[in-house]
Length: 253
Image (cartoon, rainbow, N blue to C red; front, side, top):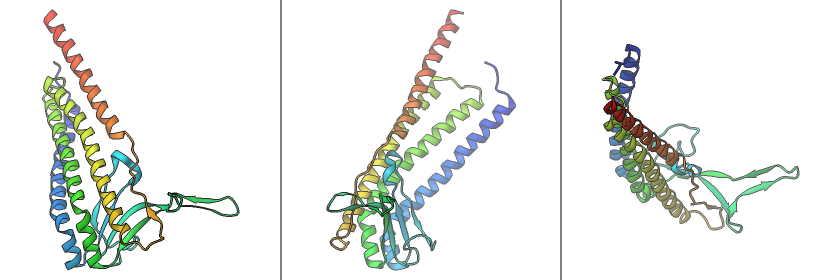
């Protein structure tokens, strides 16, 4: 086996260090979220913090959400101490049960209106957070944990590449694991985000005045995470066949 060149070793080492740094920051971020979110309702009520929870309703398996203290005046509700902002939600015209749209005399239309919902009173904001915080905790834990495992598998593969052992049975198993974990991570995000959207909409529906537009609670789907995971599984199978051919060739010689 030809030893890797110094330039390749340097690049592999940089990537391996990058994965390690990513793991460290990922663990710290995960711990911070898991510490803050369970007590978010009390933090809002007692400390006057401002939380914003965002869901990308149209992104399916790439659904994500962020929970953050915010003082950005451009974000709705950020100027209200002890407030919570949920959204964006697509607004529906309740009688027609379809996205709101308007058309002017010139034939210009505005469709698929989305909006943010802000709870300005600390007691109501704390109650809203208490209603939705556990889907957030479960989603963050499962999705981020699989991400950390994937980074660790990448780091191990890079470590073996630095030694000059690339196409090994162990690395092929790692690639296969990455494929399965990528698919699982996408489904974890989808399930957690779906629960979060449903619970937020259910809570807000009980507080919105009658006759106002309703909030859509469906979650559209795409297959980006599944496709990415399948790509890794295909690569693992290709590498496995290549390794088998190499071993057969070595035995023949």
